Length: 307
Ligand code: PMP
Image (cartoon, rainbow, N blue to C red; front, top):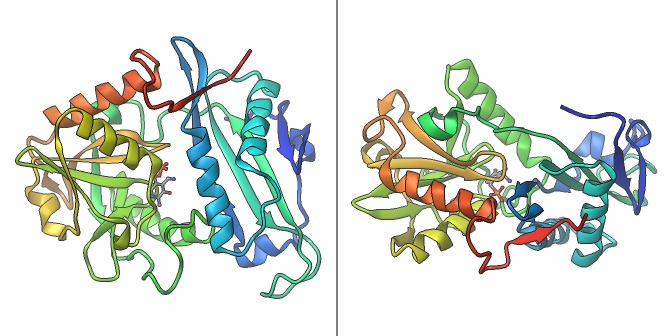
């Protein structure tokens, strides 16, 4: 929930929560011109730390670059601003939302004089798909909505407008009684969830679709692939037909919000034993140890919030 007594970083300054406003005629409101990030800060054993902060902020700048949107800050500046925002809100564990968008000047698709505005907000947030989902898993349905074809919208940009596609898939899945949607790509191959990447385990090999399957290259996805390789698992980025999901031994979702959530059924077909599988459990445990700083942070994935 939002703590409205907090502060939001707005174009270089921390302002009161209620003053972090934009005009209704801002370009972004009409044409969806925003790029953003979702990052988590964990209250680890060694104090609050942000997971892969630089990688998230670099992806934000990359998303801006794709859309010819000049975000006037460096990764270092945004990193400092993120830390300042966390501290100003006295948070130990939170979700962080940096966003850059085209602001208010005049209207028309061509963003002539609209300034690029940059915001960082942070607030407390629990488990995205429910606390018990991490253990028991969730039920998914393949959406009738597909991920954008590569020559329509850039899937590698984490842009606000992409989430119109995600909303369609998510709303349809909820209407149909599922927890989350799986989307196929323009060729009908498995792509990703509305806000998560997908993995499957088959005969002790870990598979996930490649970025060419119209997906967002998730930072959690990347982390899980590294952790899996470190554990000696074979990892393959391969295009996957939908039916591979049905006959997989284990399937799970990854994302900053969903963390690593097991899937127990897809299209009402039970996956494996219909509960969190052994490899999923091992990956999840190792991942949570990293997030909680219970193991050495060898990869430098944690940025500690100095208190
Ligand atoms: N795909 C989509 C469409 C997403 O919105 C997200 C969440 N950012 C992901 C995948 C997972 O990315 P990450 O692990 O970087 O959060």
